[in-house]
Amino acid sequence: MKDKFRDEQKALAEALIDELWRHSEPKKLARLEIMGVPVAHSVGVSKAVLRKMARSIPKDNLLASALWSSGYHEARLLAVLCAEPESLQQTVLQNWLDSVDSWGLCDHICRDLIRFRSDASELVFLWASDQRLYFRRAAMASIANLAVHREHLSKELVERFVRCI
Image (cartoon, rainbow, N blue to C red; front, side, top):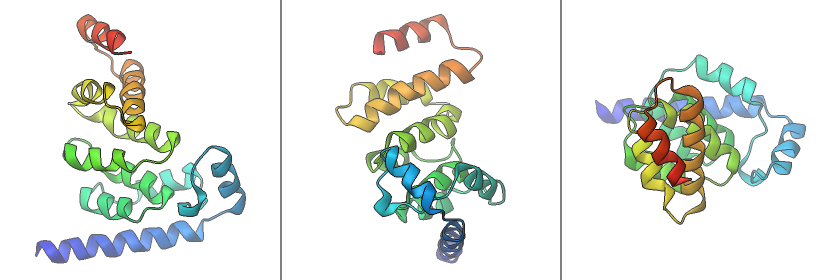
C-alpha cells in the first residue's frame, strides 16, 4: 500500500513538472541567470505561477520529496510550498539544504518552510556555526523571518539571535 502511494506521488510530481515546462518562459530563464540560479537545471517559471500551482496540490512530504529530487529549481521551489513544515523530518530538510545552489532557493526555504516549524530557532543555532555556505545563510535568513513573522519572540531568544549574528 505504501509503495502504491509513493508511486502515485511520483506520478503527480512528474505531471507537475510537465506543467512547469508548459509555463516555461525564456526571459524568465535569463532573469534567473542574472540572479545566480544555475539555469542548466531551471525551467523558467514565475513565482506567481508556482504559487498558483501550489494552491491546487495537497500538502504532502512524499510529493515534496519527489519534486525536490527532480533537481529542477522550480520543482524545488514548488516542493517547499507543498511540504508540511512540522512533519518534514529534520534530516530531509538538512538534505535539501545541503543541495541548495542559490541564495533565492535558500531564502525561499526559510520564508516558506522553516519559519513555520516549532523547532525553527533550534535549527538557527544548529546551522549558525556550520561552515557550509547555505546552512549559515539559512540560519541568518531564518532569524530575519522569525523576527518579522513571529509575534512573540522572548527577549532572551532575541538576545541569543543577536549574539548568533
